[in-house]
Length: 205
Image (cartoon, rainbow, N blue to C red; front, side, top):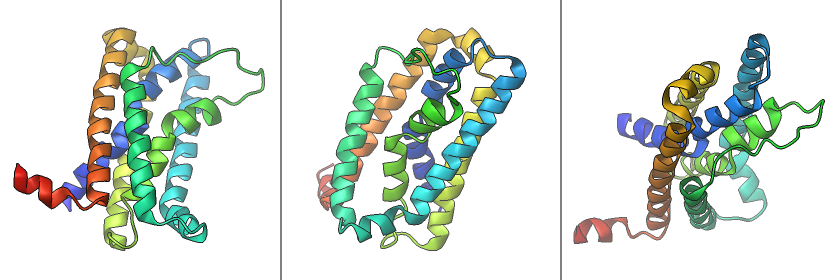
């Protein structure tokens, strides 16, 4: 169970990318008051938690209703996660702020989705809570891992100004690229597992 919790934590951490979210949050809220930054941070994590929990609870049911097998979804998800990891590695920064609408709630977009509850994270939590593979208890462990990642993300958002000041935007960019490499490797594992090649590869190693 500990292995699964750690495995799920690393996958969700890589797809949520707290470092990139923190850098984006710091840029978007640079001109906000301390009170506004705290409120935005809590709202961001709340919305992201609702989205990812919803994906865990009904994501696979929706796939079944649309006639999409988890095998096909796992292959597609692995490919998308791989591309997502490459994007993290080769991105030229997270400052996609642009001119925001005056009444636009940045806690919803882009901070909650797609920055925190990213497409990659949504795909990942559905794949690692497969009803045919994992028990309800194991799915609760995955949910706990997801909430732990969001908890760490919240702490990083609350202290984003101080963290960025210490490591700099360059340091944040470097850490994001490292997480992208880990995510790319994990996405390959998804595809290998879906194709049933895990034992063959283990034997050759």
